[in-house]
Length: 97
Image (cartoon, rainbow, N blue to C red; front, side, top):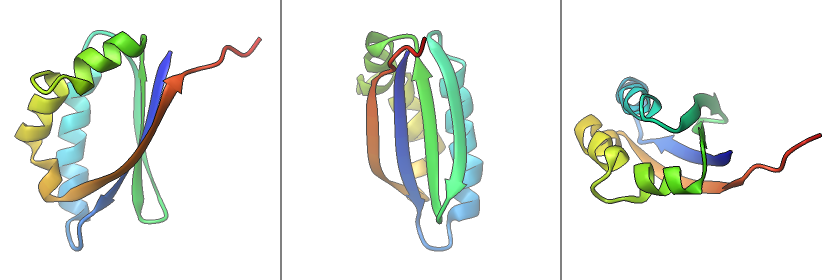
């Protein structure tokens, strides 16, 4: 599985709007073929999203394509009016025997 862990920070006074609109974005992404996992939790005032994809090619197709499903959902949800992306870590998971 290709795993992506992203950190977002709500803009001042916009956490509730980010929760609402971020969930819409996540719901749309979660329905895409090849998305195996999508969870979000709050920690230390930040929003941490954990995404699992079938493979890196699926991630590239869904998220990195400027005309792909993620870009469209991001624009529709207007998430960037309520929060800013801080960082992401990503890579293939290591099988544990």
